[in-house]
Length: 308
Image 1 (cartoon, rainbow, N blue to C red):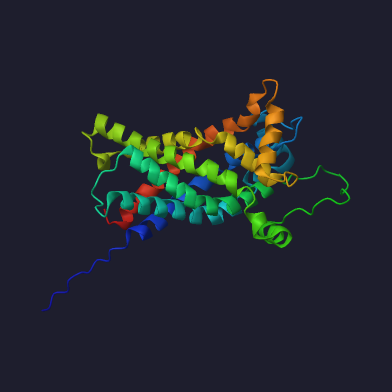
Image 2: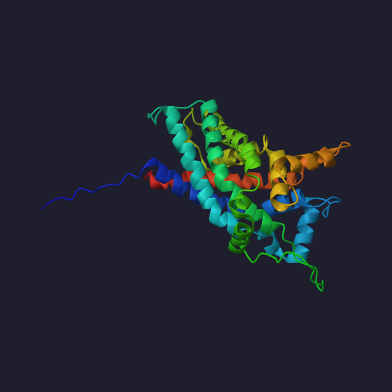
C-alpha cells in the first residue's frame, strides 16, 4: 500500500509578518482606543481648555455622549491598523533581514534593531498619517448639547470614517488626507527606534535573568511585560511631535506645521510647558496594555504560522 508523504507549506517571512502584525494591531485597537480618544481630545481642546484633566475629560465624554463616545473614530484604526501594523512588522522584518545579510540566524545588536525600526517607522508614516487624520477628525467631533440650535455655516458632522475620508478628499485632495505628514515622519522615525529597542532589550534582559539567555523560553507574563515597556519607550522621544500632529490635523486654520508649532510655543510661554504634554496621562495608561496586547498576539500568531 502506497504511503503518502505529508507536504508542508512554508510561507514567506513577509507573509507571516503581515498576518501576525494585523492580528496584533486589532488587539491594540480593542484594548487602547478609549485612552486614545481622551488623549486626542485633551491635545486638541481650545485655550482656555474645556477639560480640567484626563478624569474630567472621561467624565464629560461619558456624560454627554455615553460610553460609545470613547470609541469615536474606532472604525478608522480598526480598518487601518491592520494595514498599519502589517506594513510596520513586514517593513521591520525586511530591514532586519537586510542587516542580517541573508542569514536569519544572525543576532542583531540593539542599535541595528533600532535602525531597522526607524526605517520601518519612516515607511509606516505614509500609512499612519491618513488613518490617524480621519480618526482625529471623528474623535474631535463633539455631540451638540441637548436642545441646542444649529449654528449657521457650521460644518455638517461626519457620519463615519468613509464619509470623513470622501469629504476630505473632495475638498482638499490627496494633500488633505496627508495633512501633517512631515510631523508624522518626525514622530514615527525616532518612536519606532525606541519601540523595538525597548521590546527586544527587555526580552533579552528577562531571558538572561530567568532563562540562561534563551529568548524563546520567555513566558506569557514576560512577553506581556516586554510589550508594555515597549509601549512606554515608544513615546519617550516623540510626544511633543504627536501634540503638534493632533493640533495640525484637527484645526485647518494652521497653514503649515511650522505655524502650528509656533502657536504652541506662544501657549507655552510663561512656564506653561505642560502644553507639549497634554493628554500624556491617558497615553501612558494606554501604552502598556495596548502594546502588551500587540506584541503578545504578534508573537503567538507567528508561532502558530510557523507550526511551533
